Image: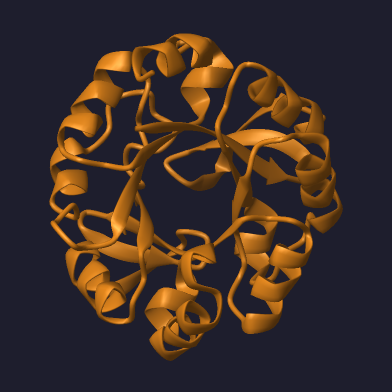
Length: 237
């Protein structure tokens, strides 16, 4: 299982939100590029970047920072936040990003996802973000009329090969991941699942690995020191 450090960017700084709430922000570093270099030096196989301002505005905002991160490290990068058009996907890929993550567009414009998958294949990842089992959109500020499970099924029929699942109520809490809900999305022949939200111990990672997820995104726990990236990586070598 891949352990993927998260770098959430807001106002040009590396932050973490509590349960996706933009009013509950903790700033961990003023230099996201330096943070990316630190995680890469500690062995991160991949980085997960989120343009939080982009998620709220509906279009990528921090392209200069993202470009600088891609150029400064040797690990692949996946990017989400405000990517809702073919042009935004092409822009992200031009920055050197390996995977582009779309969430709101998956709910509002599934035909777009189908076209993107046909054109870009594995570079397209869908974010399934859920509150109480229902998909959330627009930077987690709106709840859609579709469940996370049904959204996964819809995306699978469109040829999506990988999803990132986040239980918003666990995100940034250090409590524990929603292993049951995450495991419900893992199925033979279905999209690979990357888990996110609430992960703070190696035991959490082991429980997720046991239900068959491909990777786990870790955020706040790395910044608080609750979880050591080097220890987590060693546990899954």
